[in-house]
Every structure is written in structure tokens, then in C-alpha cells.
Length: 116
Length: 111
Image (cartoon, rainbow over all chains, first blue to last red; front, side, top):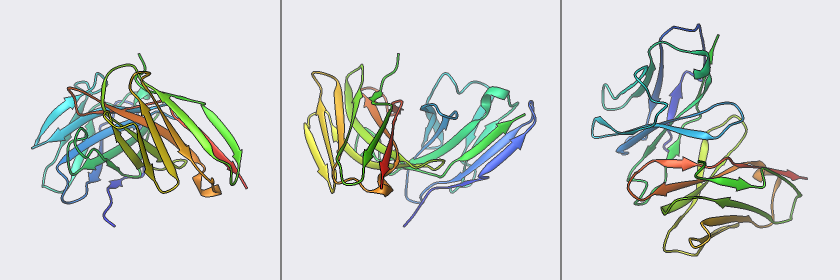
């Protein structure tokens, strides 16, 4: 069964360093998302991406964050200068249709980011 | 303000019993979805109910939606140890396409 894959599964970095989290969405999906979950807390929306551009972003997704779909298969989240509060599990998700339509999102297993 | 609030926050029941989790939300929605998350894993979609639907079934899952009370419930019948997980409701509001997740219910099934 097709699945969303994420790498790395765990990354430890020093504060101020750049981090790139990678995702390979399901191949025929058109809508791509990043969410994050701080330990023990709710899953928070970061950004949605469709047609090679950001369609929505949250207040969390500030200038330190960027997303890219460089080659038609990978979908990356870059954090330019990490802060301690960026420590969280980051989930990539993809969907074949808009959530308001058939709605279902498929999530990867997550990348745990630890900022020291 | 929190869009989705589940209750209870945690629930422990014996295997074979039914588990009911509730979700309340604040704004008008297009649809409401339930997801499961095993500890440290990704989220898995369970079921979607549209704003014009009142009840939906999928296997051992039954979801209800009351738009007048802005609430939904997820019933898992004949629970199994493998149902142990956190369950989240998530809403899609009119006018945007982002899923907004609730705070989750941590369900433990005691064998």
C-alpha cells in the first residue's frame, strides 16, 4: 500500500543550525502538508502546498520556515535557524483531493527534531 | 481558542467493552474527521463525516455529528487491545482547507 515516507526519523541539532526535513508523499497526491506535534500536545498545522506554491500557512510558519517540492517527488521543510522551541515531531501529509472534498490525509511516521 | 476539544482526555476500559470519545468545536465546519495515533507514530485516518450527515459507520466505528451542539462522538464497539492509541478529531472549516486537530483522547484497552 502506498505510504508517505519521512527522513530522518530523528535529528538532533544545535540551536541556530539549519535543518531540512524530507518527505516523499504518495505519488498521485496533489496536496501536501506539514504539521508538528510538541511532545504531549496537539497536532498543529504549519503549511499546505498545492500547485507548487504555499496555499495556507499558520502563524507558526514564520520567515524561519520554508517548503519546497524540488523534483516532483520530494517535499521538504527547512528551518533556517532552529530554536529550542522548534523541538517537536514534524509530520508530513498528503492528500489526493482537498480536505473539504474527500478529505482524507495520509500522514508519514514523523521526523523527531531535538534542538539543543 | 481551541477548535477541537476531546473528552475525556484519557479513558481506560476492559477489552470487549465499548469506548466513547467526544469532540466539541467552535466554528461552522465543512467536515469532521477522526484520526488514530499509536504512541510515537503517525496519524491514521479513521472516518470522515460531512456537516450534512448525522451518523456514519465503518466496521466497529460509529461517528455521530450534532452541528447544533457543535459536537461529535466516536464509538468503538467491542474494543480490542490493538485499539489502544490516542484518538483525535479534526475539523475543516468553511473557507479554508487546513485540518485543525483537537487535543485528543488517550484510550487504553485493558486485556
